[in-house]
Structure formats: structure tokens, C-alpha cells
Amino acid sequence: MSDGDGRGEGDVLSLLDDEYAEDILVETYVEPRSARRLAELCDASRSTVYRRIEQLQDHDLVETRQQIDPDGHHREVYAASLERVTVELTDDGFDVTVDRAEEDAASRFTRLYEEFTGES
Image (tube, rainbow, N blue to C red; front, side, top):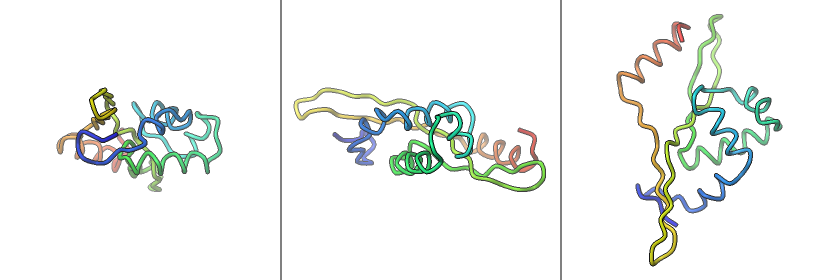
């Protein structure tokens, strides 16, 4: 198995088949979430959530962001960066292509500004 963008995905399909990894991706697709909140939503321990997040980050399927609370404290939240996975059968086996969401500079600046000011 290979990744169409050269990242060497290897076991990405096995990871996506994992119940907790899938739940984390679904829960972080629309809204970034903290590990604590993901543990609640996925009915998993925080250590399980952190292990899956690490595996998802190894494949660039989840990214870490800093979120600033109105009281000035900040915390890490996680957001899915996976957009699409395509599997093609070839003469050599399966070819796995992972498309990741690309955030343009203007959107990234707006998101950072809103997180900083608490306007999001």
C-alpha cells in the first residue's frame, strides 16, 4: 500500500478501521475538540484517545490547535485534517491515496484571530 502523495501510509486502512480512530475523526471533522471531550464523546479513556490521536497524527489525519478560552487560558484541541481516502486495486495490490484538507492562509489567519480574541 502506498499513499498518492508519497507519505508512505502503510497501515492507514487498519487505523481507519479502528472504532476509536473513526469516532475521533468524526467528532473532530466539524469542530475541534479537546482530548477530555473526545473521551466523553467516544466513550473511551483519555489514554486511549491520546494513543489514537498520536496514531492519527503520525499519518497527518488530525492536527493539533491551540484554543484560547475567554479567561485567557489555552488548551490543545484536535481537528481532523482528513478529507478523503481512495483505494484503488492495481496489478501490484491496493493503492491508497489520502487527501488532506488544506487551509488557505486567509482562513488560517481568521481562525487564529478568532481563537485569540474568543470570537469563534
